[in-house]
Length: 433
Image 1 (tube, rainbow, N blue to C red):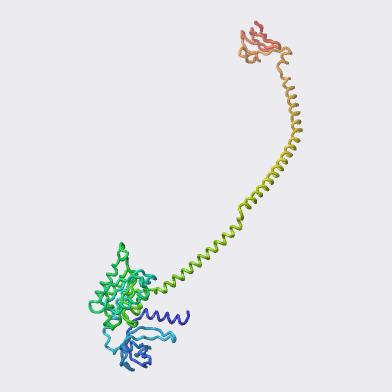
Image 2 (image 1 turned 45 degrees about the vertical axis):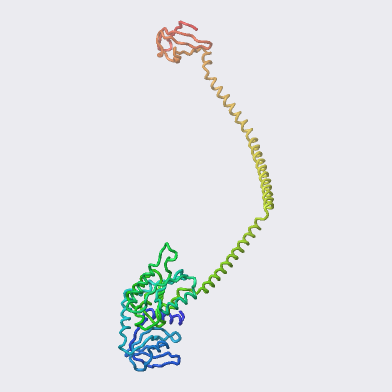
């Protein structure tokens, strides 16, 4: 981190944590410059602190200040960047013992800060381009003219809604709270002219601590915390602080500064819009050029349709010729293979046929040897009962049983006369056919 950035960060931390502060001490090394600014140190037994009182504050409360004087001052801590010195920017000074109202201010500040009303985590950023601005101030206040002039100069097109209230006196806190309530309720979804406020200004001109006391009311601080929209507080001058400043989302040094914070200059916005328009136009032309180049490249690859068609036809013709040649070559190879197989098949078939014929002849010769007719030719007969069952043993028949004897040239019906065991048994025929 750069040295200047570190010094600025320390200054910001001091301002957020301690300001405003009240200090009691003895003046030492007092001097008044030609510009009207006063410089001195405050010291006591335990330390000392450099102080600077600018011309306006010196004109209001700097008269009579001198070395050795015991005073009570209030102001804000800061860091002088060029030297990195801690200093107190004195906004008012008075002889010791005359600060009762300021003590009350510091006590209220401590109580409300402890209750969380000044918590920076809840503070909201201001809208970049508000559509409608609310304003709470007195109708007779110079702050109203200052704010109106600034808004008319910067955002003459924006509507501004005024919620009047007294800004000084015992009744001012309650009146200011009522005006804030009216601003919070100022919304009607059915009415486009009352669709709500994007930001709210709470302003008044400068004055003494007593004059600004209405803006230190705890009632007003709590009401500001309830705001549904961001609130800019511009009360007094740059050196004036009120509790309303700490409760608001943003503190402005003056009423005019408050108006400028929430109303960006019309000329600045128009210039920004013009730059955005120029960038958009350039981006659009750049995109169109890129698309045109891409289209040209595609057209070059595509060529004329007739040329592409001729190329495709030539390609198809070449592919057809290649396919015909490949088919003819394959057919020729298949025919040759079949011829080779046929030539090899004929001798094998002839050999197989001759072998089968020899096998059949041998089987026929063996079968002829088993032909019953050959047996019958040698004088044998085949006997069977009336049911056609062969009779091969004497025990199968009984006397009187009809049998049929088959000879080589016919058959005989015979009847069993007698059954004898052994080879001497005789069967006589009673009928011949």
